[in-house]
Length: 307
Image (cartoon, rainbow, N blue to C red):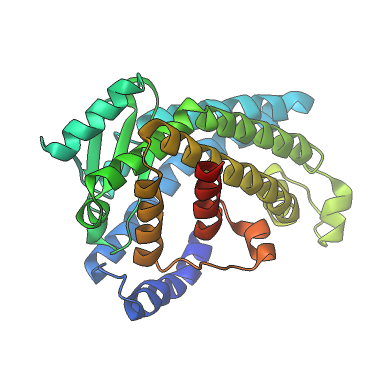
């Protein structure tokens, strides 16, 4: 994995300092770029190493039901990091500051209260440290639940537009999209480990790769190569579900805020700021888009208002 990451560093350099720079997005300094890479490698080594060791141990020690134990262990890690990541891991890369008392904060808190939505807080993130692109996202569960707004987003949008964007994120929670995606993710990992169980120490598989001796760790490597088509198929269905959820979150934002024009303008500004493709090929959308094209989202909102 380290070798693979090293090979991809030149591509990352080109993407950040050539492509992103060409279109005016890049604000990453070489020092930040290198630090980010080193931090991600350390986290991968520590967290990934622990998970990988647990998986190996189960497949060495627990026989035919190893895939069930691995599924349970990985699911536990996954849920644990959903709680821990917002307060431990993400701050290693970005600075999260509670939104200061202002008209914006009052408007956000008023809207959240009207929707009976309790949050740990609304935070701004120094996204401008790396890029001029803007975004917002919802993260965490329970008392760790928080809304995060990029500082670049706050600079470019009106209060009504920001509340609409926030309403969209709250809509994901109210419509139980986050929970549904978690269930799908858990189910997908279960399918993956079940299929993996047929690859472990499979002599026919090792013979196909001209390998004389079987081993658990080599089985995992070979499985990783062969599982890619399955993973792509799962991602297509996951993206279809995600695009449906985006339409539903837009509808929630418009119906609860009562200001469709603010949501439409927010989508337009986000599209301009991020240089989104307004008319991507439908097949490209089908294969890899987790969000519908912005024109489709705007048309849906306008159709709703007309009806």
